[in-house]
Image (tube, rainbow, N blue to C red; front, side):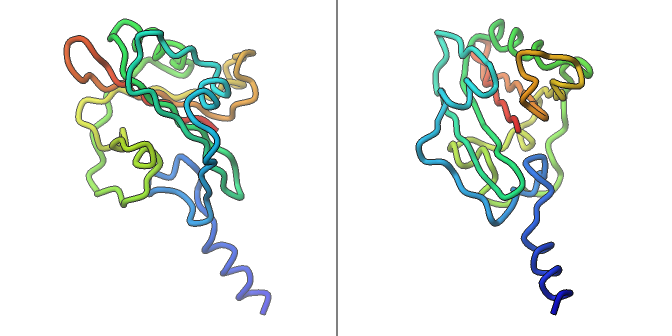
Length: 160
């Protein structure tokens, strides 16, 4: 009986927000939280010229994660990206070779998952590890920059 309960518990577990397969089945989106709450949690100033500003908070039994995305000028996007280069500069990532199932985090915002975008650049950091006093409450934060055209870059941020 105990073994069956343990198997059931393990089946409900996810590897957390960094699980690129879409996360836990026992997650819940906070319908009252959006971009302002995500930006406040991440301590990110959304540029005044930003468009398509979207955000969300998702709870699971393991943690709470926040998403924030917006389009802005390439210069503003680079400035935001530099804030999260604590463990190395932004690096280009190849899109995942396997399809991402529906229901991935950024799909909740009506956006493609940044891991599927050709030419996206990424950086991630553990704020407490690099002594970021402003974000010491965050375990991990990552930024993705996607060039939309010569004048606009989409910024994707995910934190937990």
